[in-house]
Image (cartoon, rainbow, N blue to C red; front, top):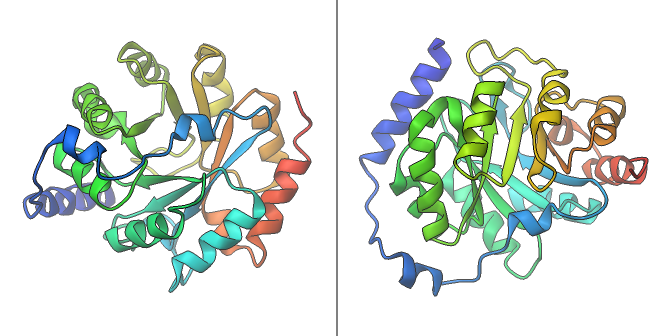
Length: 261
């Protein structure tokens, strides 16, 4: 495990120690309406998960996002089906406040909100619910065999999970625990290198009823088209969009030139 990832996980564990929430799944589900990420990513056309992302351990700072709501409004105008909000502070300069603001701004919208962080403890799931997430990212390589428990806790609170994998072994495990939304991350979390062919290699091993999301390395329309042609249901795009002067137009152009399958 590299130094960046070790530092991020150490900070995550310290943050969890400070979390205190009253846990009652049934009462919590009456607290607010939760949108279905699976439904949001089940259209006949390609769906886009647009991300609020300021920085990364591999690239450093690449976007000053003082007002995440303004960015999200552009994403919505472009036709994004879901919004991913990075809440990790150490590696990505995100905050839980970003999640709260975005969720409140999209309260009356059909657009689902995904919390993207390093989720390793059930308390983080309750925190995510409290701040308005509809779904969470669960990374198999991080949570390992604890992923099954975390997935069950998500469902207890009415939340869905995008279960992220990086190889065939993790994919088979994700399928065995009943993950119905699977993200293939082309980025190796240990080296932060990207292999855009990884998703194309793993996609044939995923049943058709499972929603499949391509993550990382989608830097242009050519790469996007490769995933669309391979049968992916959705693309999660972060850095490319936040660096763009016209993210809404980029989303529209990807959706309009998708070459319907």
